[in-house]
Image (cartoon, rainbow, N blue to C red; front, side):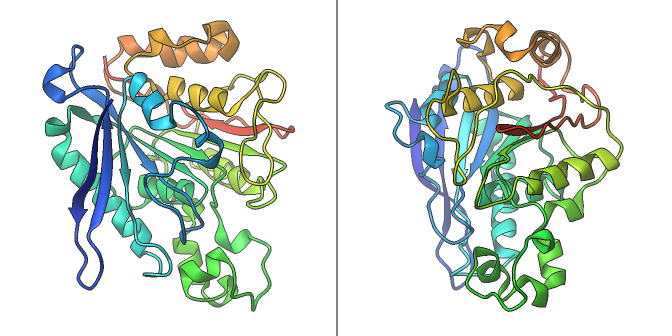
Length: 324
């Protein structure tokens, strides 16, 4: 894996420069299979803490971190900064994420990436920003989105009218009820439209920090926008505890969750994945893997939504477009 740290992609007057880290399977001129799909990882932390170099908590103890695993699957991975809520209020965080996307699109050729195969992946607050960056008007186009336990509808959160010490209040500059217009603007459900890119939402119903219902609300909004349904695999359901996917329970681990998302996104080396097709469900892999790779980079259908409320993962699955 080739790593470049602290690449400046934007500057804000009166603020620090905004940077991103880049993880590549190989140098662009050394890639045997040509340009790679681009995966943009947006970190979590309640819009207030954490750092672009910190992957989701459930992956931090892996001997080979999630960035290395994703590059092994054939992705060029970019992890950008954004201003935290202690530095600037919303929409600064979204503006920074969009500028990172614009920079990456403009630089895709030099990075050995395919601009048309740009995907977003965010966890928690990063899932909120990834969804927003895929849905708001005039955003750079992306081919698909993965969100882990995101906040999708701020006004729907059960918070007291005068609550000021929450991540959302820090983001907005005060309680949600006192900043409803801004709260709606910060909610992906507000921006759903018929041309939305494919989504995969992974969210456990036992999440004690961000209610599972938040992903259901976005799933329902995507469906109302006019979508066809695609049934995800049902027999591998990672549970979630305290806003994270825990360690191995039964035959499921956080690595399985990452693997499923990467397979559905269509990494450059899916043929090398360890899990046989049958474990992921023949309908999904048949449509999103082998068959899709024979087609040009076009949508295989509109948004497909399927949800199931079990002690496991809420999965909202759209057919993801793939390059030939």
